[in-house]
Length: 610
Ligand code: SF4
Image (tube, rainbow, N blue to C red; front, side, top):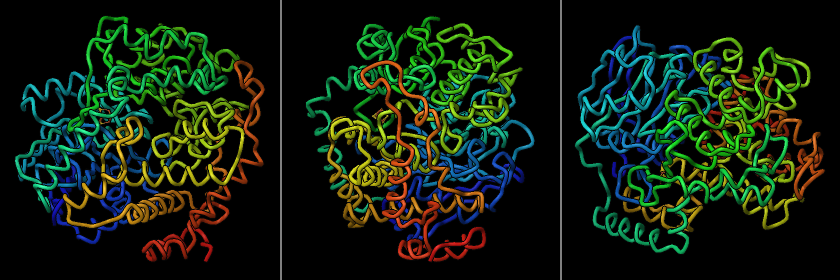
């Protein structure tokens, strides 16, 4: 195979068995890589009903056919498993040297099975693999663990670790790499912790097979140059995603006080320009010349790498308007291996519950010290922290009453940084995201602001699907970063050219969309297989707050989502995807996407529509 190594490394931590296996060209061509490989493998190999934190779950690190080549922003790795937070398919992507090293070691995927009897570090160097004691690292923060491992095994190794949150099975623990680049929001760090796997250390020295090396180099050079020459490149380098704080405030979508409001009176203090005043350096993922990690010195004199989501969720969403303090919470979350977005939701939920007198614990909006203390309680599962460590959905069930109406999650995954009281298209994007509420698959909100935010149109349904095909399909399968395309206008047409030079496959964007649709329907089938008859379209509906509790401030004061119109949009979305009224792919759709065997198996769990 060209472009792909055609091999996966399977490591069983219970038995210590390590096996290099080949996979077929057909799988490569029909699922591409990254998320596509992960869902194919989880569908094929995971028994329905497998407990997410049991040895039977499989933790997958998957690269794509462009990963590791000198192409713009191609140093990403997908991490996936059945999610302990949602009970469905979970994944995330991390920009990391480990992606490149995995490919240069001769593998496209690493599949971790079983459970080690003691804390373990998995080291892979080309054909050699070993399971080392991780006892010395257990309990350490992710940042220190990586630093120590790189000191021991060399600065160029790729390291992926968990922090104490993953060790303590916090349901929104993620995996961390390269000084705070993190991924796997739906608890991929907890899955790694449940396997007693503290870290991966990867190193490779091989040349990744390529169809046309000269053409690939030429395209890479041209691509990097084009990114550099984009008119907004300079501003992007200054602020990265942080400029979105001001944009969200202007558009009244900045999550504020647990998504009660869309404007925050101290927005300016935590925005892109405030960040520029504090910026000390910049970091980025491998193979990327957009380096969007803005590093500031936080309120405790340490470095913290900020982006929009972290600041919105740990700033305005908890009523905290002091950027250096937001920086501390963000750094702690990275070091503990906690997803910052879910943490901001959980803290906001706790503050609201405390305000309403539902918690035997006082925590006020914007109280930095209390937020820090509660974060530590969550990580170590102390007192109320243990309840919150299960995520907002489980915590709301425990509190009872109306709490679930303002537990801001969809399918149990906490919503990311955009308030949707007055953004129905973005609400649909969150509702239908394949891992639970996340913006990464279809960030339609900026487009929606331009076309009219109050409407529930066909065009919005189509835009959500189009973006899901591009962002959730093409980018997550190629495992390249979507930001060059979104933020500086790097043309989508580059990617079929990159793919052809790497693999020899001549695929149009339409062909790639079809692969994306296949991957989407398979991810949906996975969810439905897990939930069986309990699966229902309500799984794709945002929390009641956005329908029932209007904004009380800002230019959209009084706005709410309209439930009936949202439901109508959702049904239109299903029809366009070839799914039935419950949001389940029909037999016909699965057959049309080349997945007839999936239909056959799925019909054992739920009656399928022909
Ligand atoms: S744009 Fe940012 S997130 Fe994307 S690859 Fe570059 S540094 Fe990483």
